[in-house]
Length: 81
Image (cartoon, rainbow, N blue to C red; front, side, top):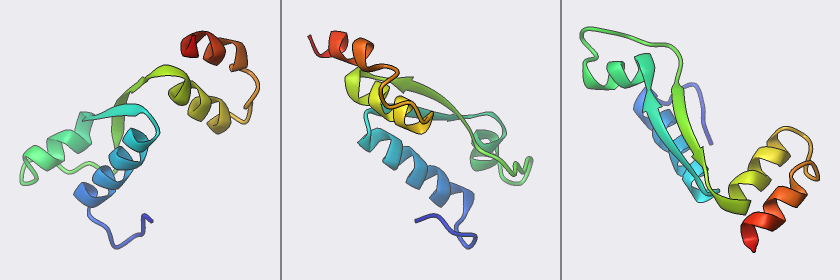
């Protein structure tokens, strides 16, 4: 669970772990990555990701997130084949 007391590093780790558990590779990028590398030089207040949605499981997560669990059903079946 993410809460207001967590650091940027803790939130990024929690989100990345949750995404990875659902078949999604996430790479931290942008200002938040700069903040973790050089906190004295730059502070970001958001988190940016580059993601890779792999296979049918990734498609299912995306479809559910968008509120259309059936929208990608045909595509997901093709990935499983």
